[in-house]
Image 1 (cartoon, one colour):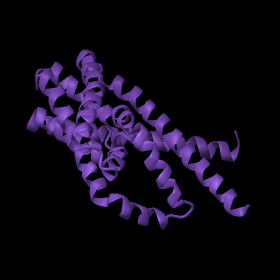
Image 2 (tube, helix red, strand yellow; image 1 turned 90 degrees about the horizontal axis):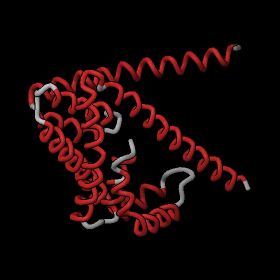
Image 3 (tube, rainbow, N blue to C red; image 1 turned 90 degrees about the vertical axis):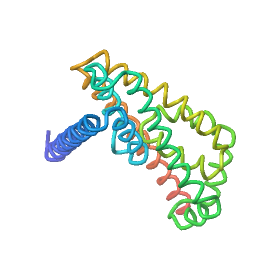
Image 4 (tube, rainbow, N blue to C red; image 1 turned 60 degrees about the vertical axis):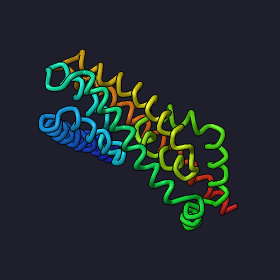
Length: 223
C-alpha cells in the first residue's frame, strides 16, 4: 500500500472513530434532554441543530421517534416539537441575516480573499429567482438547511413566507426520520448510519465546489 496509502487509511479510520464518538455523545445528550423535558427537549435539540450544524438531526429525529415508540413521549409530540424546533432555529438564523443586511454583507465579502463583490450580486439574483425553492428543499439537506436561512434574512424575504416554507420543508423531513425511528424501534440507529452517509456526501460536494472556485479564481489572477 505504501506510506501515503497507510497514512490516508489511518486518517480515514481516525475520522470515523472521532465521528462515532461525537455521535454517541450527541445521542446521550439528546436522550437526557428528552428524558427530562419530554417532547420539549426534542424541540430544543433540533433548534440547536439548526443553529449549530455539527449537531446532526439525523441522530436526534429518529431518536425522538424511538422515544415515542417506547411511550416516553407521544408520536404527535415528537413530530410537533421537532418541527417547531426547526422553525425556531431557522428564524434565529434569519434574524442574524436580517441584522447583517446587504450593506454589511458586501463589506465583509469585500475583505475575503479571492471573493468578488460581484459574486454577491450573482447570489442575490439567484436567490430572488429561486429563494422559495431553496428554503423549502434546503430543509432536507444537511448543513444547507442552516445556512439558507441567513441569505433569506439578508434579502428580507417575507417573514411569513419564510416561516411557512420552513415549516412545510421541516415537517416533511422530520416526519420521515421520526417515523423511521418510531417503526425501527431498537434499530433506530440504522437511520443514523444512512443519514451520516448522506451528510458526508453533501460535505464532499461542498468541499469540491469550494476547491473548484478557489482554483478558478487563482488562475484568473495569475492570468
